[in-house]
Every structure is written in structure tokens, then in C-alpha cells.
Image (cartoon, rainbow, N blue to C red; front, side, top):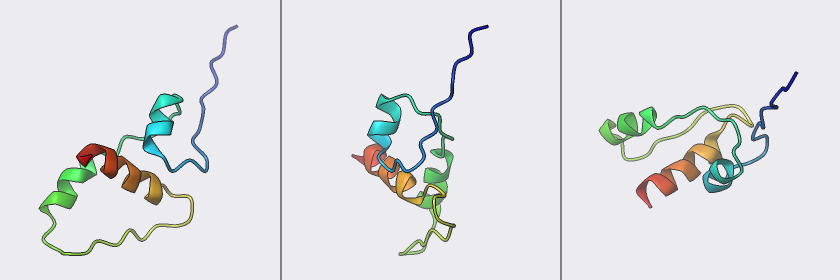
Length: 65
């Protein structure tokens, strides 16, 4: 039986590294459109520790980069 292990990006906040090293992640690009439509000047990401805030910001950097 050949079982492929899923690499989880625990502690990784660099989107380029996550994609390059083939880590498993949940695609959150659908939220970029919601951010663009938001009329607020500042947006706060209120989430618990290790919930992907820095990774999402890194993803935005490469999306707009």
C-alpha cells in the first residue's frame, strides 16, 4: 500500500515557499475580491494564533506583486 503523506505548512508564512515545496493549504484567493470591494481604509485580521494571517498577507504580496 502506497500512502502519500500530506505536508502541512505549520509555521510557514511565506507563500512562495509553500507552493514551491508542495505543502497542502486551503486556497483563499476568493477573499481577495471581497477585500477589493471593501470600502474601509484599514482591514484588521482578527484570528487566533497560527490561523494563517501572515500566510494570507504573503499570498496578497505575490498576487499583486
